[in-house]
Image (cartoon, rainbow over all chains, first blue to last red; front, top):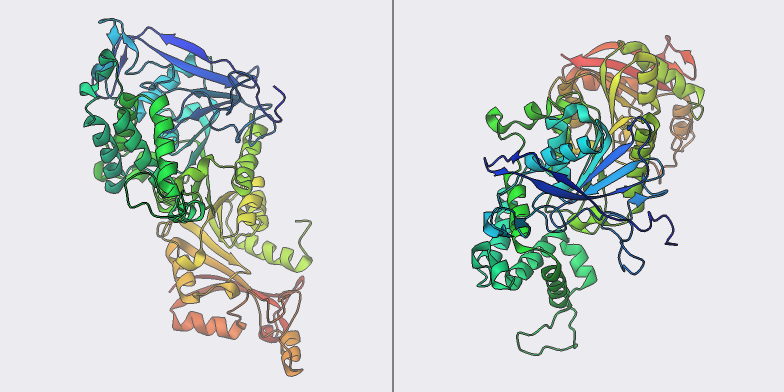
Length: 378
Length: 199
């Protein structure tokens, strides 16, 4: 592929795990598989590996193209590639689809070997801790004892935090972007409205819709529309859509009239065609449950982070109201309280929570500068 | 360091001499991190810089320093009381909006604070005022209309401020260029550095 700075054509790989995995919920998966992609080359002493943790609707396809005809590259292609901020000429970068996902890793739509049917409602709820455990097993499989860095935005950033306390010796650097130490009541409330949209869709069938040959499309579509509202800032919505009307005049009806309606419906439709509703439920629940201080008295994040050994780069975005800069500052404070190395950048950006996926020169310069330092040590 | 003129280097050396080896330091308004890097190199300090400007955050990260993007005028609520051996404010005091709050926060977060600032009472400044113009000098390089400096003071002003706010002055060094000034410091010194603590 002749695209500049692209990792080019990539082929996903699959790792099967036959040893049982006991999840935080107490449930056990006897076996499972994880689908992943890698970019760049692992060096001889295996010290240049970087793990990318994905967010709510992400997957293993982080950079490059699956085929020459694929229109859009992986979801973080602007960040990862030769000469890009996370430089695949220096790092061996791994993206995976988390357990419970719907892009090739074992999830609710996978066939349960016991019944020969899709797991559906019987697929266990997984947590961020479970994901970190499975990611660590994948690292073992690839012979990587210690990552040069683990990087993630949003829910991905939460996995990075969890890594830093669960396996302190297995990462040298932690890049926690547009994340929060745990959800607020408002965050959980948004997630529950999204879940209710799916759960109350008549096509949901208690989660076993696969057997009925339908999908809870309406529910998933509304869930995604709601999500999109919270990912964008009021400002950027105003600038992009304002009160613009598709036909230039009021029609006094309930069809699509405002451009913002058209945008949200398009996003909802696109998502409903490509994502599994059970996975969406599971991912939002993992978000809600995430609270690494849960086991500590008084839920004190500073006490939790005492276990961490990594050096941190924490980044937030000025107009992100889903995981606002104040939430990132909570993380920074907990790191400072433990005398850990940390840098914190608050990026001025219009795009709200979505800004972490956008190409912003300063944001990318900060990540590039930090990763150059990481590369210098590898 | 190669970018810095002698005056500032001497100022850094003074601050470094006060910082005990291996201390935990917080450098407020750290700019591109030159002082912080110097303190890490010569005093093995474990340090964090704080700055508001994007370009400075990037410059510090490039140097491999810890830097926190934060508006000093919004306080230091992200830092625990007495969590640093020294909180340093070098050549930044005069640009702060809320002096009482900033100094108060420095002495809350730091066991000691180090403040260095240009002396408005320096004789060259006084001469320019007598000539009817706002002073412009190597330490006050701005014109009146584009200066970020909104709270300039003299040594006497700062010492009076400390007295009225119950702040102990532990040490003071006054300089003009590379020379340390003992006699008539408020007139002959262009830069002053103070090591202070809560009274």
